[in-house]
Length: 122
Length: 108
Image (cartoon, rainbow over all chains, first blue to last red; front, side, top):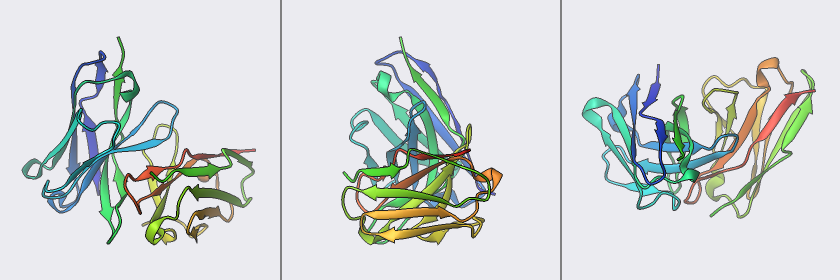
């Protein structure tokens, strides 16, 4: 059974930093691209960042570019999101999601974790 | 950026009724690369369809996906109690991959 478990969320002041982790199990982590998707309270979904299986290609949404860094450790079946210079508008539930790619296109997300809540507030 | 607009915002229906949810894109979705997700309160999204009409594992056949170009539809042929939820569409034909704002299907 595929499982994705996020951790590391919490309350942080504007301008602060936080590091999210996602522990994966039930599939060969090293062969899949992974993503972070967030959902602000009562709002819709926003794709945040993507990393290929080998970490060779990384993308970010414009809203987080230059502030967030995605990484992974295939030996430990783990995905990370380092978030710096946090803003009020970064407050959201952050989901780790497995990506499934298509030729000539991007990715949809076939498995999701339960999310880690990040609250940015003074 | 491709903007996805879902309608209606809320759909009030009774169990057994047919639900028709719309997702309209601001530009043609390349390859028909559109997915649908279901989200229940306090739960993570669940993949229903990818590439417009390919059903994900374990999704009942009362759910169907259709459409092309800029207009896509999710249909639930006869609502079961467990189908009352929020539904999101997502396009992955062009970067950045974007989501619609969601349609809530509620019990009438």
